[in-house]
Length: 170
Image 1: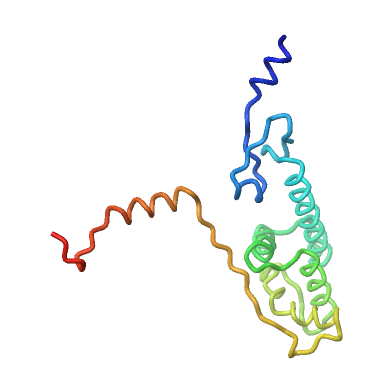
Image 2: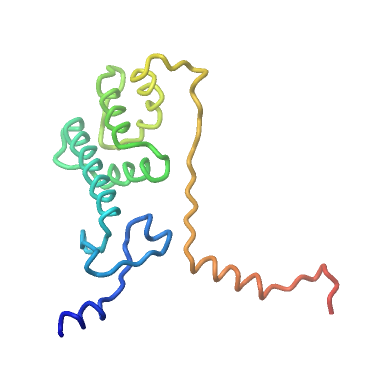
């Protein structure tokens, strides 16, 4: 009898994965797994763990190339920014860092952090794929629009309270 009541009374919780947050999808508590104090469904958990593993590979590369025990907070911020805002893949960051380290004219220091990655990215891609010519290079920047539901609702509320003096209504 107790098990039947538990199944009926099981709560719906939200998954903190990007896909589930966008669709506002909720799952049963038994279907979610806790990872870093947040609940994720199986599909989102795979994506989150893969991203964490790739990011840790970039951190290891930075540690070995810069000869430091761990990446600085500036470097961590730059890695996240390159991935989320600029759309640079983690593997491309590693390849670009290796290219920069092999060049004799460029020295790596912790003061600048990883600011050289965007400047050497095209050169790395050209070396990776020699068939690519300059005419094939396309510059594209992915922009993300971060809007929360509350922002949209408050904007609609503000627009509904605004008066238009040009319409001539009295």
